[in-house]
Image (cartoon, rainbow, N blue to C red; front, top):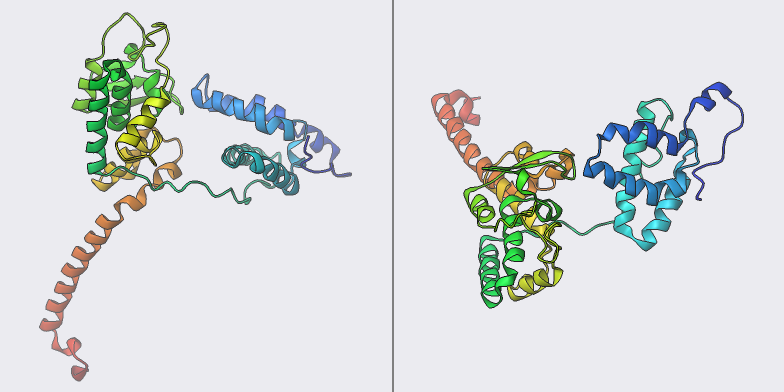
Length: 319
């Protein structure tokens, strides 16, 4: 176990006795506040169990110090930088709650710099979307058994849903022009469907399975993702640098580029944190620039008119 700090001698013994261990605070206070049996809570539980409890579980909250957290983060970063970032983000949230509860004075994870990650700049253009659509059609024409996999890709692009939300989609969650997800990553949420998305779902066969995309081998379960199909589709479409998750980014970028307010985009994608949606703010920068130019031109014109009407302030000679 990595030590977050060495216990300090002295001080108020009664207060120290009241400070819970990290594992106790997470299990009895922090996790219950995340809601009952949501996918996000289960995700947090796994991360806590695998990453945080081995390092900090037996420490009192006021004994976690920055040097210990940095050693843990550096060691994990050498193996899995991305997982280390997620673990550090989770630890920050837990310790922020501990500070708010009065169990610690400072959050030792707060100012530790995360590992640089993949820049989220890959969005499909309209031409690339059309090219992908044509490639999916051709692959299905070659082998009709690929239809479900192709429709999953299309539905991801039409809704901005996460892959797991579409793969595990149940007929009971489909409600006309919307999907009522009972167990999304951040809890229950509603996904509104465009006409094209509704038509795509409506054309799926009703086989008696609870799932919209059932497994052909075991209809009682959902279809397993075929990574080989996606890798082939993106290669033949000339989009080898595009991940499935980039389809979700594409929906967000299209929404922002078309003037949809960021709070609406956040609801559409089911973001739990506003910072997740703020990543897309730059997508609409050219619209903001154009608006600034239009407004500036209008105001400059108004100012010019005012100056002509008031010669005493329009030229230095009148001063």
